[in-house]
Image (cartoon, rainbow, N blue to C red; front, side):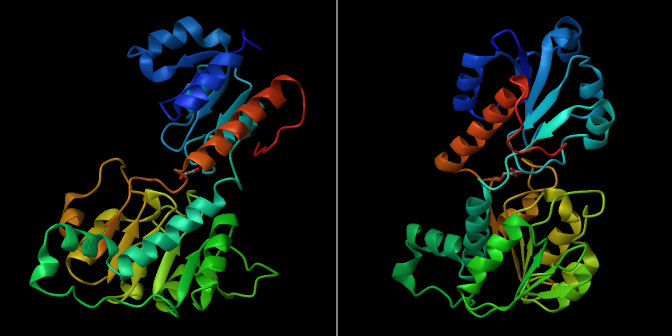
Length: 313
Ligand SMILES: O=C(O)C(=O)CO
């Protein structure tokens, strides 16, 4: 397979790069400042793309690669890939489901605890020597709080399972009710937000779910409510979120993703009721290795004419 050209869209894992280098002819797209010229020269040798949650494959990249057969994404989310175009052109698409579910659900619970119990602020309190001047302020209990989940897929369900261990009543919103779920279903996000203390965004980003967390939803969650986002930044109308937090109309937020990441609104930096993470939901050695194995496994399966391991298209 050494002659098969694989285009990696951005830096994502040096281990994955090394493994791809061993098996394929790997092109590192980000190393070519003149990308148009690069594509003119190399488009006929590229048969696969490896993308991720930062850089996938839009219609123009797909159209510029006449020999493209498969996009193997180093992510579960597919919002950076033009799936309609792939279907039209018969290009296969794979992602990395399941292997990252536990890590992302763990980080959601971590964000809830860090936000309610002010773990990051407490840490800063100790480091800065303030403890010697007096005890830290009281914080908010997590156990027993009503947890609402937008999107009860693999990750949403894993978050629900974890929150159950904290004795939290769980409810959820999704496009349709899950027939076998024991959790309370709300057919719209506004009802969910009005009936929970902590709202967790765990759905895929689509045209339908873009800005699903808007001003109305934030106001329904209210000054004691907390928003947790481990989905995608564009699920949230970010300027509305920032103004609600600054004005005290929302109780707090724990965010792993941002609308224009890695740009983060600076108004958030001064707020102690907000915990900010640099999109690290799946960022453990164990999970990233499993994701890399899946990316390679899918490419090898495709080029050996075997069934794909995690096909989407
Ligand atoms: O896999 C994804 O889509 C991620 O965002 C990982 O955190």
